[in-house]
Amino acid sequence: MVMVLYDGSFEGWLTAVFEIYEYKLADVQFAQEHACNLSMFHSRHTVQTNAAKARRVWQSLVQRNSIDAANAVYHTFLSEQQGIDAVLLRYMQHAFKQQKPVETDYSHPSVITVIQTDRKVRREKHRMEAFIRFQLTGDGLYYAIAEPDYNVLPLISRHFEQRYADQRWVIYDGRRKYGIYYDLKQVSTVQMQFSQQVQASAIQQAYDENEQLYQQLWQRYFSSVNIKARKNTRLHLQHMPRRYWRYLPEKMPEGR
Picture 1 (cartoon, rainbow, N blue to C red):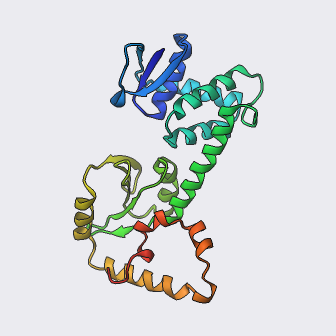
Picture 2 (cartoon, rainbow, N blue to C red):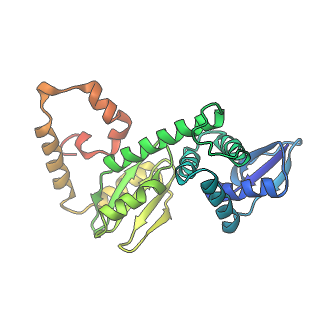
Picture 3 (cartoon, rainbow, N blue to C red):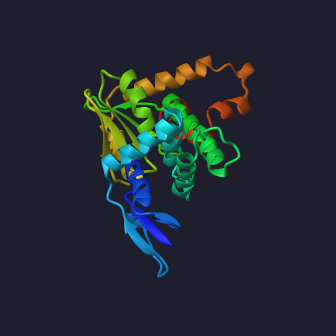
């Protein structure tokens, strides 16, 4: 058994796939370097992320299948499900072995997993694009907190960059402790480590003086368009699951 250690990034994983073929590694397991616990029965292969190797694997997948298939692999990786890197390796091995595209080969277990997981991640992406609510801080920065089920911040950055191109903003993933920041020129990744208690108090103190008024107006607007006679709780929860309510101003008590 060979334990393949990589840095946890998608580029690092693509590099690992390249080196599995390069060094003819068999019977492999993946582990991220910071969370590795080797047993005495494992040998180790440490991967140094290499952009050129990663690009070759990506381009090969696109050429043999399609850009949609390659994107599905990327989305599946972002799901962060346990053991998904090994599932994706089997998908890649299957794809490289066949003489035709495998993205619709529903007889192969790894293909089915990728199709299903890709669909879930894309659904979460669209929900984040719909449910992100920015709040204005005193220094003119628009700030939003989210806790998506999957690591979709890399997938939503383009949407918000295009939609809010004239303002500085940051979207923080409270579950993964990092964010994406737009400085009016480009989007970059930022790391922020603090507890939820500190997070809540610090952001509240930094709000623009008019922010609470804006939130109250938004809450009243939401209440005014919500016709009680047509209330359908089941349908509402289907489109806006309760787990997203925590950071939605319209779901917070008025006057908060």
